[in-house]
Image 1 (cartoon, helix red, strand yellow):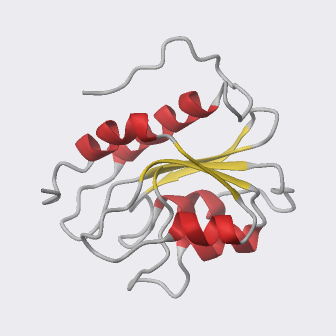
Image 2 (image 1 turned 135 degrees about the vertical axis):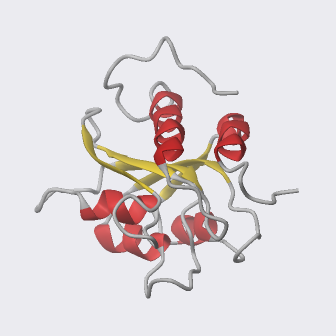
Length: 162
């Protein structure tokens, strides 16, 4: 079952009025992921303070080990000030991974993004994740919208989530 967001304007500004809209779009983006038995299917969007979509990505979009946030960050235009930007990710940004040297949490911090909104805390199926805590400890505003977590679980129904 997918949560529809019929009342969303095309480009709502981040914040209480627009967060659910953008996050629902990130969840839908996660449906494009090629399924994997060893990784979650995740969608991510980076949105400017005025509601402009700066970049998006999804797991395995370009390479087999791609994470959604990593792809979106790679697709950003050069010289974009990200301090007021928001990352919308269907799943909590990773804080541990075996496939790449830098986690999504580290990449978000290095990019200087000031806000992260996600729907579902990463289950400990593959790694123990504490991305939300690390981001928050570094001064990033972290917002969890668990109302969309059921949709993220549905996107990941190919995994043994219990």
